[in-house]
Amino acid sequence: MSVAELKERHIAATANVNALRERLKQRRQELLDTDVAGYAKSHGKTAIGFGSTDLVCCRTLQGHTGKVYSLDWTPERNRIVSASQDGRLIVWNALTSQKTHAIKLHCAWVMTCAFAPNGQSVACGGLDSACSIFNLNSQVDRDGNIPISRVLTGHKGYVSSCQFVPDQETRLITGSGDQTCVLWDVTTGQRISVFGGEFPSGHTADVFSVSINSSNSNMFVSGSCDATARLWDTRIASRAVRTYHGHEGDVNAVKFFPDGQRFGTGSDDGTCRLFDMRTGHQLQIYSQQLDNNDNEVPTVTSIAFSISGRLLFAGYSNGNCYVWDTLVAEVVLNLGALQNSHEGRISCLGLSADGSALCTGSWDKNLKIWAFGGHRRVI
Image 1 (cartoon, rainbow, N blue to C red):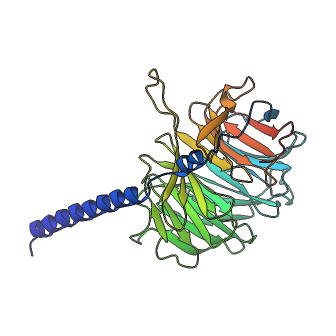
Image 2 (tube, one colour; image 1 turned 120 degrees about the vertical axis):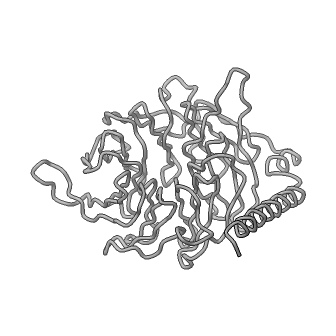
Image 3 (spheres, helix red, strand yellow; image 1 turned 30 degrees about the vertical axis):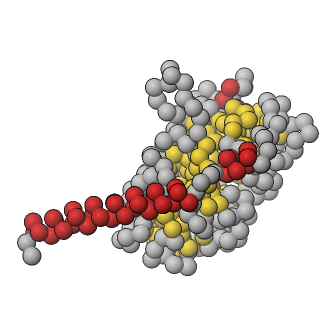
């Protein structure tokens, strides 16, 4: 068989696959006759009462001299680690706003950071294609800096995201621009499993975000520039468990719903979406109607759910931070419209472990802590 004939067959097969995919998509849409909001509203549900006094900015963390790219809370809720364009990791006491550690990185181009479950170590990664681990209890060197305790190397592209496995201090998952995710043994520095890459069910573009299921730490979801999210089982690295379609742009953020049965996504297409992990169905789209004056759709950079899952916090490239009612798909508050809001792109956000506070990070070089006020402590 000639090369021309092979190409012809490949083109025909690709067209056939695309046609089948479209038919499957249409059939799914026919079966999904409503979404979460449509069902809730048909049963008389309304948006939760929520105003500017229910989520109040109580602290602004100032200290970075460059854009803030990433943040993470410790499980005990009172500390935050942030990573910035200034090439530093800063560990903050969230109750006092004081800096407890300021770590100067060997590679200034950091993109992600995470706390270990015990709160004694932090990890970070970026354009150096490595993930560096720092033990916060280590003795500082002559320059007053904490030395690196372990470097995880093996990715062939930048490290965009990292997260420690919640119930295993020595396990960490990274996502990378090399289109793969990796499960690491932090103690030895060795790769345990690689997800994607040469396997056909893997991502076909850069991985931007990962989220581990707190209800079952063997499962995690990844979001990618290929406009999909994929579910993985750490015990079966050879293939993705499921691929979730629907977005029309890069998937910048993924986050599991508190019950571990669903997860949310945020994308360059300006929408957040809620997916059912098991069925693969898209349950809801969270999207704002644009004004006629808006020429460009603000992208979703980061997301987090409240402790009950009733609220979805979404950060946007235009500085808005919407609080969505996940049940009726309505915005109940925009933190970006408040007087003491950020003055730049919201690049990252996260909720404290007990759900009592939200932290947002921005290109304005600051982090802000928002606490639930009044009668509304935790939702």
